[in-house]
Length: 153
Length: 293
Image 1 (cartoon, each protein chain N blue to C red):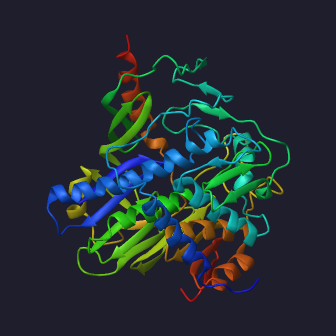
Image 2 (cartoon, each protein chain N blue to C red):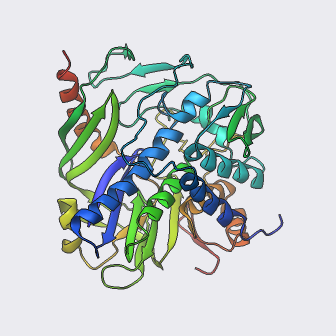
């Protein structure tokens, strides 16, 4: 393998430039969410699996959720979690963590994310590791989705 | 200021050393989060409506795709060429079959059509026309590049700040200095002890990404994790963690995955060939350092 120092750096910076030069990241409000290309027939099998375990096929034509922002809460073994889930046209567009008390990095973080910075110990702030999953947040997200679903009809 | 949101099945944590007003800072952070949203909508294989999954329904005909998909896909294919297919973005169907098929927010599972034998040679990208052509039905997995690309885009949105960290579940870019004016201290997660770190490094204007086998196991087979050799359809186990430091997160992300798949010796060589630094941890917890870290 021939050493090729800059190739990957150039690929990365070209990739960033491509997004900006094409104007893809300029319009703030124009999120083209949930607009499937009309000419494409869907041949996917999507299985919806709600918490109660029963299986039902998701129906794209009828809306599953009502648009809006819903607060969901859940618990993990260290305490409470609160998330704000925003839904637009059956697409979850945003999940913000508004409160959590969970094991995080090498210490406990309790309270609002904004306040966390001041309270922290002078030790390591950030930890690099295998990407941890969102399992701890699933109950809270589901709680918010339940509310959105109940709101239909 | 610090804010957290969920994207790409992980917690994205953005920390900014404030110099601007609260409103201005918040707006910038929100723009940075939008990078994750955009890349996720483009690259997710867990959502039938993502740009990737819609484009992959068309076989044999060029499809115009946005740079949010084109660029990370091209990077992944270049990595596949470099590693002779050990790193291969067409590993998606294998991942699906091993139970990595569930959307983290909706819980919906996906089952996609695919030919039996696929490789990155079945993907044709045309830079001139920004098109993707699939030669066969297949499932593209951009798990080793998309998050890195989103981190790089988010970092670009925050570049006016003297210091910030974009941390997407343990893969991160750290810019400038922390609130005390020091380079950012980053711990390397201990693969077995959740509360401990193996080492600490200092970085500034660099990314560090870690691929490890200790977080995401296959729900169908406890011997398998989310890092898969597409040829053997098995998970290599010589390493349990591989961290790479690079100027861009997409680079650190892809090379940490590739090095993990290659194993200690070849992985170390790959990292050093590209003038990067890395910390590889073998399954018996022996640390292999690359690039003079």
